[in-house]
Image 1 (cartoon, rainbow, N blue to C red):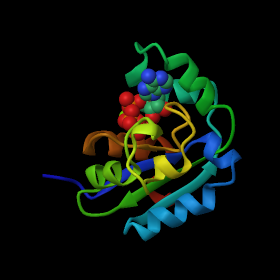
Image 2 (image 1 turned 30 degrees about the horizontal axis):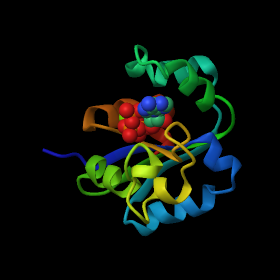
Image 3 (image 1 turned 60 degrees about the vertical axis):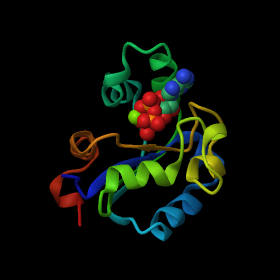
Image 4 (image 1 turned 135 degrees about the vertical axis):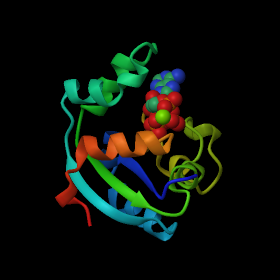
Length: 139
Ligand code: ATP
Ligand code: MG
């Protein structure tokens, strides 16, 4: 059975380019309800913990350096079948492969600075949401 929440981050490059508002607007326009929202920074250690699942991958050090290089927006989103719906909505990991009109196509720079993160499973949506938000920070 599919869950109804997913977790997203707007990545530092998209924030630096001034796309925060546009991306939040596109998320809402896509029918996702914001259940929690935070503008914050990750330390390198926190980024390493968040992306621990990728620690064996060659891009792990670069990715965690990038994700701790500037402010991010973290959010919990609600929609039916949220994990898959959001992954479809943001587009392929590499913005150049993403479909026209998707968040990554519109606002991504390259495969690392691909505008947004989206959870890959219901289980990880719960783990990632709890990484950032306490119960009383959720509506
Ligand atoms: P995310 O988990 O951020 O939603 P994803 O599930 O589409 O993205 P993953 O395979 O989980 O992709 O990779 C996590 C992140 O690692 C990607 O969003 C991207 O920023 C980075 N990444 C993935 N593959 C590469 C690569 N080959 N080179 C550099 N960075 C990469
Ligand atoms: Mg992923």
